[in-house]
Length: 248
Image (cartoon, rainbow, N blue to C red; front, side, top):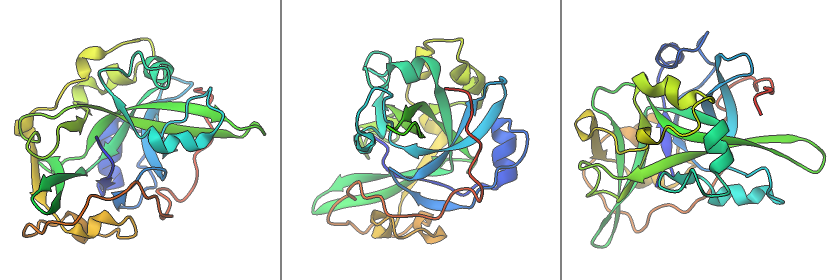
C-alpha cells in the first residue's frame, strides 16, 4: 500500500517534469497523509495538463457519505478496472501524483522500521492515480483521488508486499489520456534498479511532524507500530485554491 509520502522538489522542477505551463505554488511537504489536500496532474477540459489540489481518499460519485474516502486511499491495480468504487475514475479520470519519495514500514522483531523510498537519482516521480468528483447535498463539489498500487518489486519486497504504481515519464501522456480506457500494461512494479531506500526516524509516524529531517537516513530504530490513518490538519500545499475544472 501507500499511506504516506513526501514532495519537496522545487516547483520549477515539478513544472519541467510534468509538462506544466508554469511552476506550481507548492511548499515542501515531508509527511503527506490520507485525507489531506494533495496535488495531482490531470488533463483539463481544454486538453492541457494542469495541477489541481484534491483530497487524498477517493469518494465515488454514487457514495452517500464522503467519509468513505478514508478507506479509499489506495486502489489495487489488479482490480481497479472492475471494482465499482474505482472503475469509472480509472477509465475516465486518471491522474498523476507528483512525489519525491514515500514511506513504508518494515516488520521487524519487536516493531516496525519506517523506510524512506525514492528514486536513486533523487528526481521527482509520479504515482499512478485515479480521481473523482463527488457532489454534496448542497451541490458543492469535492474532488478526491486514490493511488494505484501493485505487487512490490525485488528491491522493496523485503520491506512490504505492495508498492505504489510509478509511471515512467515516457508514459505520462498515455496514463493521462482519457481516450485510452485501459492502459493496463502500465500497472506494474517499477524498475528496482532505479530506486533506493533507507531507514528513517520514527518521528514520521506522526503527521504532526513535517520537516526535512524525516527523510534523512538514521540508524535503524524499530518503532512499536506503524502509524494509524490519522489525518491532522496540515499547511496547504498551495497558497491559492485552483479554479474548479469542467473536467468531471
